[in-house]
Figure 1 (tube, rainbow, N blue to C red):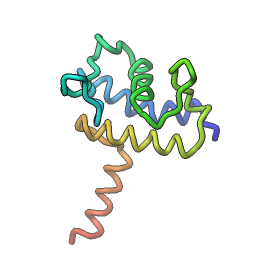
Figure 2: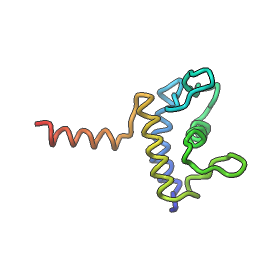
Figure 3: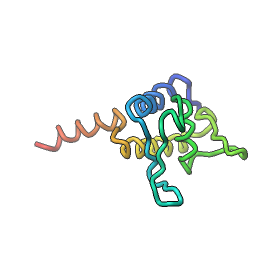
Figure 4: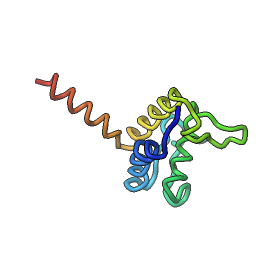
Length: 117
């Protein structure tokens, strides 16, 4: 699957930018430190820009493939199933941090309008 820079920038960039701009920390769901405390990525301590936050999100996505060095692959180098799983992971991260994909919000709005009568 070929993920263009435009697609990647729009789809992932908008949501990672939202996390970066509007949250001082990002909680990573289903991960805890050895002491049982949740994994929190702290803005300006753990990440100083959107690209580093995006990198962390790939690192903590256990289904996202990594090179032998541990570095995650580029989105342009993975297939559609991996992209779909990463979208699900991103959805979980966004929900955990009080946000959501705009497309999810729109879908819920349509379902409520259609069936909540």
